[in-house]
Image 1 (cartoon, chains in turn brown, purple):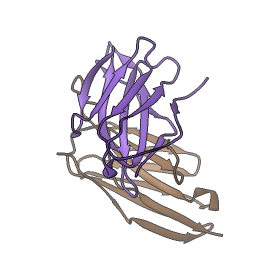
Image 2: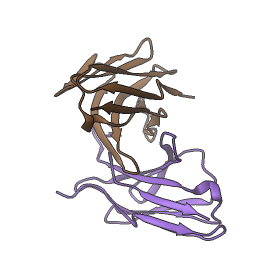
Image 3: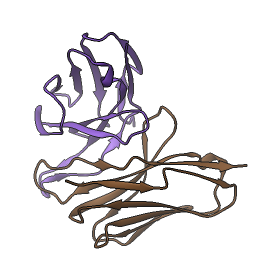
Image 4: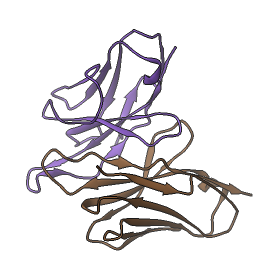
Length: 115
Length: 117
């Protein structure tokens, strides 16, 4: 059974700092890994999706890396801003078998950027 | 282009009642998945619908059932509500590829907040 862990559960940093969020998963047989952002009481916004054959993806100030063999991914946020405050979730999708496409999520890291 | 929409936004029900939540997928998508997110937790997969049939199911009791309509929209029904069913219910849609035999990236809706008292 796939298990996804995110450490730390909460993180507070001053505005302008660079930061790293961690995600680990127990079963390396994944199809892809996705990072989401969730604002309080809201739905999920996809930030980055990394296919299992890729090592990293970048979008603006965000960079996500994937080490499939060790079961780890990191989300790097450069020059943090107060608007980055949110909960960040990672999710893995299993290697594709027809009908087996459920995402397994971690519990998230609640990020607070202090102005 | 409208994304995934869900209704209602919020809902309050009493223990033992039944509830129906609705989801309209993103334009061009034919697959709908439902997730339950308890407070402070990550979303948990409930089930996925494709071609009006349940294709995959998570570890949820039979009180949770669903339906997909010919226009690809979907409903989630929960019977005999328990206090523990209070959560944010998220719908995600994707597009199935017959070539690869799998669906592309899932897009999530804003969710329905269900409170059971």
